[in-house]
Image 1: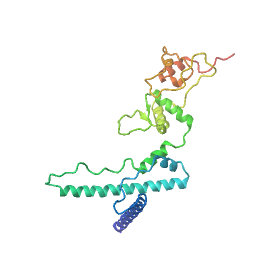
Image 2: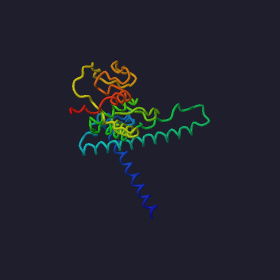
Image 3: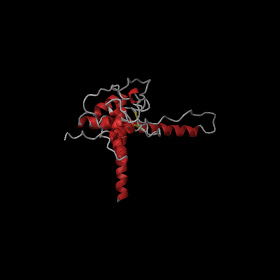
Image 4: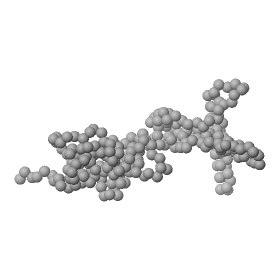
Amino acid sequence: MFSKMRAMSLSLDDVNRKSIISKVSRERLHTYSFDHSTTPREDYISVPDSELLAGALGDAKGQAAIEKRCREYDIYNESIFKRNYKLYQSILQKLQHTPLEIKQPPMPAPSPNNQERLNMCKLRNKTVNCLQQTNAVMYLFAHGYELVQERNPESGFNMQFEAYQAIEMATALSHSLGEDFMFRPMARGKSTQPSCPSYVSMYPQMEPECMQTEPCKLTCQMPEHHNIRDKIDYYDQKPSAPPSSQ
């Protein structure tokens, strides 16, 4: 009984996939001027980034529409690759023991696919607490991490992060060190010391001149411009509260 139900489920899924492929193929047919001397191109379909962003940030109806579109296009792309690869294998078999050869196999479907690109678009544009994210980014900078626009997980360099990952990574790192990345003491009142530049370098090794100070001295009142060790030494020597007036 179970095997029959599973066979029916697989059959229904196959019917749905064929229906989607047929639907997208018809859509593509109407996107090209048709005459008897040409045939529609069978390129892979990638949803433009602008449309992914609009869908990801849209209302529930818009999000559902872009989800469906990405899913259907990925099924269509997969069908193109399977058909081309099957043809490739058939031609290889026919060319055996002949001087002819095929230079390269068919190009695989785009990776990441449309659905994966949409998921990343949602992550990169989700609403976050600006103060938490800013503190998290600065905390990771201070520990030698590098902010990148697009992180490649296959690069093997695990000291890189994207903006949307900052809070999660800073939370994990600070907890492992027994710290709280949100604790960023700021000096009160005006400082007579020269201020640091308004920017903060994305690369820890490129520190502004005002960071080059003697040990346990901060030349400005912007702690994010200094490394963790300097701040610890500085605030360890500084009273945590003003002296009592009594």
